[in-house]
Amino acid sequence: MAFLQRLAERIGNDRFFKVMRLYPPYLGAGVVVRRVARDLTSLEVEMKLTPLNQNFVGTHFGGSLYSMCDPWFMLLLMMQIGDGYVVWDKSASIDFLKPGRGTVRALFEMPREKVEDLQRETQAKGKINPVFQAEVKGAGGEVVARVTKVLSVRMKERNGAPPPSV
Image (cartoon, rainbow, N blue to C red; front, side):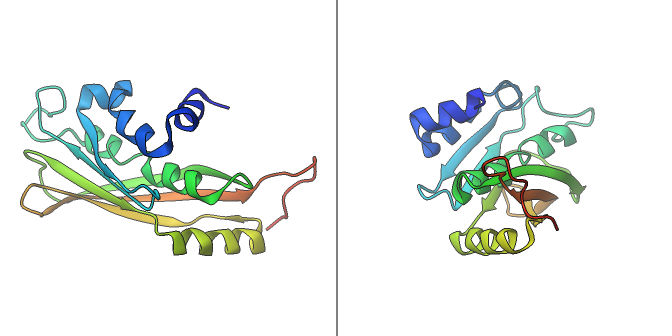
């Protein structure tokens, strides 16, 4: 089990997300988890514009905008779906729509009903690639970027037997 998984298990998933601000890439960029639902169905992150995360023209650096969105869908799903599944990030893209100025926020939602649907679909197919989107919004609510994440979800091998093939 990886260090971060052990930490989440030890301090609790909701607290784990709060201490992610100490993760070195987030510490430098100033990414902070502002709110996490106790049932892990939603999470909101925020990033203030600072000299450490701005680009040449004084707006949010695109890499920081993407970084603030990177792990959340995978982690929310992984922590809800259970031990019988393997969840990975498969691919990602980001569309920059407007310059990000000031404080930006993004909301990530993983409703329990969606997780149950993904469980059923994975059980039926063996492996799936669900797509999720989040919007990065500026202080006025304007969308400055849209992130699309594709996850890989498959059944874990049991007793040495391979998961069902697709």
